[in-house]
Length: 293
Length: 274
Image (cartoon, rainbow over all chains, first blue to last red):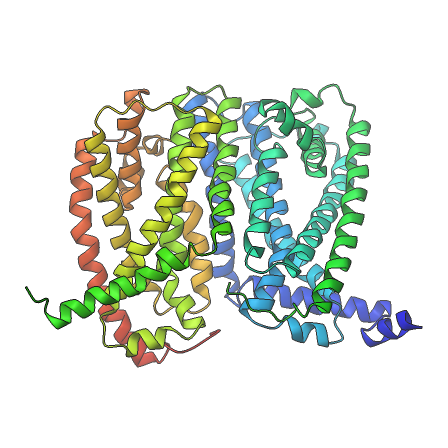
């Protein structure tokens, strides 16, 4: 009965949830773009990832002094491009809590509106997915021309790509929920959490280098996170080969099963942690706390 | 000797604004952990890229030094250039403008305080980075290294004051502007690779950012790597930095006066969430 009342109060029908999701995505886009002119926002959104990609290009050129069609560079470039989703979507979902709680001071109003916080955060994440997709496409185009990286289009495993790619976005979103849950009950330490986790994942997922160069104990962590497998699957689907010799002996279906299992694990953990922390934050009156952003 | 009252007020404003940066920012000591560890994580990825490419050992040192220097650039962007925007959001900016002190003193105080706290973070990044990745330094001329560092910081914080005055008119786009200036400067100043590889003219244009020349000179003076990787001779870079210091301080004073007047006319000094 209590559940029904809660669902009714918050708008429980599928149609209502869809409407909430659409509004949250629109609001998310407006907030993420800072209500800026779309062209200006596009420039802002592109400059940063473009610069990161070019840093890697120059690092490669200064050491290897070789062609950018070298498989090492192509794997590095593709990994870096797709990793952008991890950084931006995860941070988008978790940072929305800090932004709305402490900066705009609107989080309490979202809680008292018929909007579900879970759906609201998903909307913020979707806005980031859209913005990141534009960036990734442009980074990939820059890679194809003028950098001249080669993707063997004829042998791309589209089925694997089309299954792995969206599943990875779902995984990243649930990781964002996990962080958002922690941010809800943290005060002054909330802001470095998302940034710190993204930085750790950038290293341990082997986004821009094979995980074999990491110390042994870090490789164990690498193998325990879904992003490592996600990036490996994307590389295999697009390029047909592995970046890391550590994965050479694993069949694609084996990689996919690991990815699926870890996705489920992180998905369930993210959901449960968020729901639990959401309850704790409400019980402790932390929804409208201002701790100085 | 008695200090003229106007100078005394100027100096007191500097101390007053530097105080929260030095004492206040370090009051929450647990913040030092993420602020020291985050730069290490950021640079670790680039260290492993070089290792995967089997780059010469000094490249790891280049990354550690560059990664440590990001503390200063981040401080300039987020705690100086966009600071007036944050002050506006917390309704402090109008109090600064009302107070009978020069905004230049406020900015200088911010700069000195920021320099102190950034140095702690940069020092931690160098110490931990060197320890974790086994960086060895071959310092040939410590005096020149310190001079280059000092001049880089004076010019950089002068540039920070100039940016702060330009950001004075900004609303919420200050956030995007700071974001947009972060990684591009890492790229053009060669934080993670020798700036010479950008090509002469691009490196020359990037030299307007004091950290470009400072970092290049310090790398040449602290690591025994390939001498052809240096952009200019360190003493030439030192001379250019010496010129940049008064230029940025002069420009920032002029820009601050102009922008403050424009903000008063437009009535944007007390606007929040604009």
